[in-house]
Image (cartoon, rainbow, N blue to C red; front, side, top):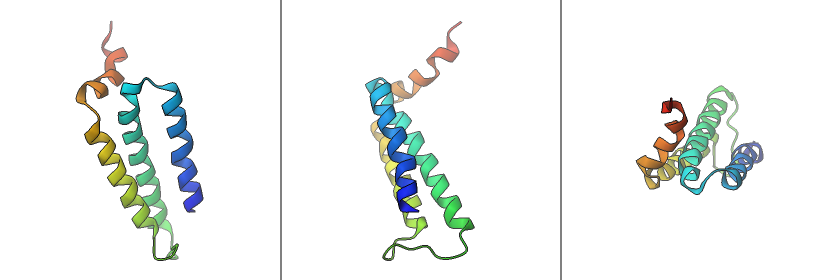
Length: 91
């Protein structure tokens, strides 16, 4: 389960680093980590058995993804986030 969640985050993160402009990497990584936290929380909620890896549960992984997503959002500038919406505002 942990390997699957890691691949769900690592593969798109590497693609973002290679394909996006440097200003957009942190806001995109923040969104990706929040999505990963959501997936981990949903898996933890629906999992009837307590899946643990040496006392680490899916809830712990969801919390770690959330904290990393918050850190990426804090380190990104508001101007960088506005670059995502720039194509939508041009006429």
